[in-house]
Length: 101
Image 1: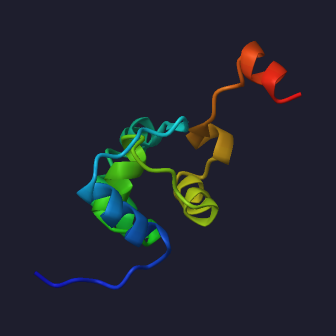
Image 2 (image 1 turned 90 degrees about the horizontal axis):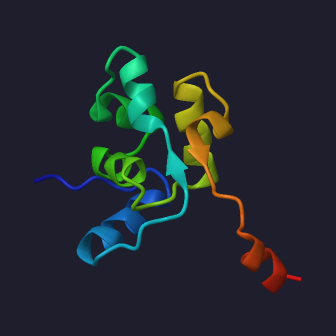
Image 3 (image 1 turned 180 degrees about the vertical axis):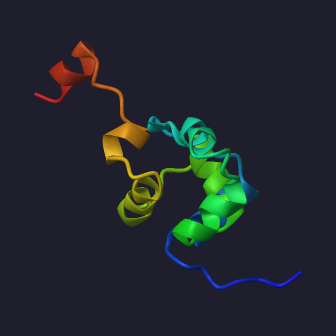
């Protein structure tokens, strides 16, 4: 097996996440839906297009890893979409808002 050098900081982080159980991120995404709307684009095709490994893309798509801002922009641009069309972050609950004040 040939190892590739990381293309961005996300590679090393996803490799370490794969070795230990990863806590799911609160960031959700529409990558799977967008891939299918884009002619059933494969994970490998999207990963190649945005410059990450397929394993990194799988972790992002499944919500096990939050991409860097740069990678998030690349994903959005691959679908000609805005960041908010691809990624969502839940609003804070009223209890969280009170504790932040």
